[in-house]
Amino acid sequence: MPAPRREIQVRHAAGAPESVAAVIRTERELEKLIAGESTADTRQISAVVSKLHVVIADYLDSGKSLKITLSAVEILSAVEAAIREACGQPSPWPDGADARTFFVHGLYDEIIQQPSNIFETKLFPDGTERYIPISRSTWKACLEKLRGQIIESGLKIAKKRAGAD
Image (cartoon, rainbow, N blue to C red; front, side, top):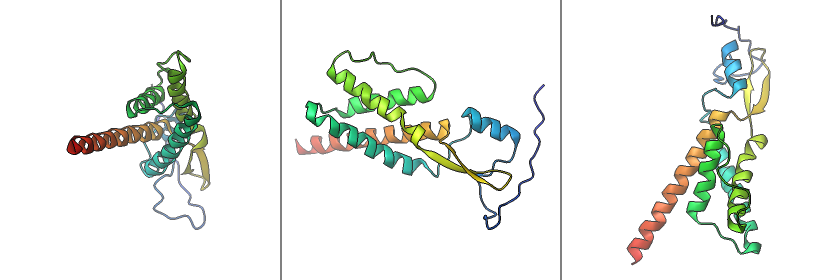
């Protein structure tokens, strides 16, 4: 038998706005948050995706000394693998089949390490605001937006090249 959903009375901290939408109101909502099943916080997606752009650019820059430049398809494959990992599936690549595969896998590793560095704030019923790791659903939404941006950019480049011919 499922546990009853008990509403928790929310006390706002002094000066906290009444319209704070991120208040955790029920025990079930807290359980979902802890389990990573909460809904995506769309307010953070753009900021996280911008951070991912920097992380990817820095990683790609490190390949210059190795004379490795990844294509959009290879970058996209690392992002796709990170999305699968966010859903609980393991990395599809063998470790270091060759230098290029090793480098793509390294990009994947760099991407999947980012959630440990990204926090969101939640207002708890006791009025305290706490930092918690980014939720799995928000992380997945960020990766999906990043994937969409990479695809869109690739299509724009292809159109430009087709128009130049």
